[in-house]
Image (cartoon, rainbow, N blue to C red; front, side, top):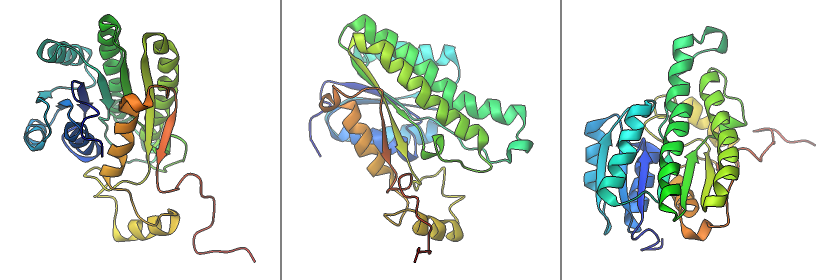
Length: 260
């Protein structure tokens, strides 16, 4: 791990109170960045910020990431306190499980608002700040393998994640002239607070058979990929998606079966 890739940089991590977001916040802070966690869970968010190390200054903002007013206020507050925003990690997300034909309008809207609308709101608010500063920036959006691989009973979630990737490519095209890169990280099965309730022993055994590397991912591995795309080392990378999935997507073999 580089010790100083983010010294002098300020990063916003949405949904940074737990799971992948927390791991990303820890990683960016460990490499010297100023990290601002934005989350609706004040208790967990403040606890996460209290655990961040490194040489930077860290803070927490309690906000509804699906609200334009809250997002603009959070963006303005970070600029006021830190002088600018260099990195945005759009990680906030929720999972609601229901068969497609039983998915209510309210459930669909809730998931899309939290998972996709939040990316639009924060990306535009922060990108405007980056354009005004004239110093470029990095936007990294957390997608999912289920943007491209179906996940039964999670149609709203998969729709939102697919939307994130399509939106990111267009944003990358438009912001390149300003020196702002936009990329996605596509986690596979990852062991977090979000997934722990549904990763029963049966599911874990199935994942072990399905994933070539034979285990769910730990959030720290996702954070390592995010840190690369957020760093100056990725200055020539934009509009792409990095799979961190243990080979889940690329492997079309049949678990426990062989052709003879």
